[in-house]
Image (cartoon, rainbow, N blue to C red):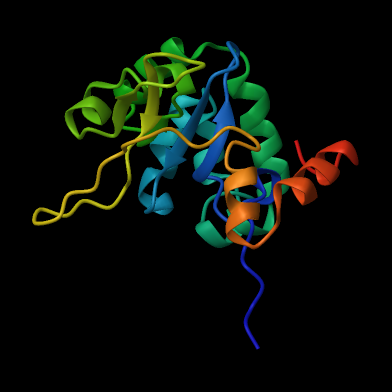
Length: 181
């Protein structure tokens, strides 16, 4: 019998230094400090709370785990006081490991995503010049490609039903009954 998948709940994350947080301008970032005891002092200073570094409630990974819900609430409140751009300056000054969470609009113009050909332009009858995600699997010998847009709802219904043995009369009746489009 398999185990239930672990779902991330940011309010109760096991390691508050490996969690996502929101800033004043409604931007998100992911704190990614995999060695939290080594990063803890810098993180405390970056947040403007150097006294937390030696606070017995937070001064080890075990203590931060047991007090994580309170600590995450404190961190949330502090991070909501500044914009992402302001925090990025502070994080760089304090060697905080983090990653900005990009919006969908930013992802499709990201230089690295474009260099890796993550997106492809696709002609679509309803939305010309549609940018879609390329297949994530890359093969050198047999490269994948996106050839056509996904079908419209009901686009192939008649063709499939005819292949299954339905007659045009059957299809007309199904349409009259609003069973198919």
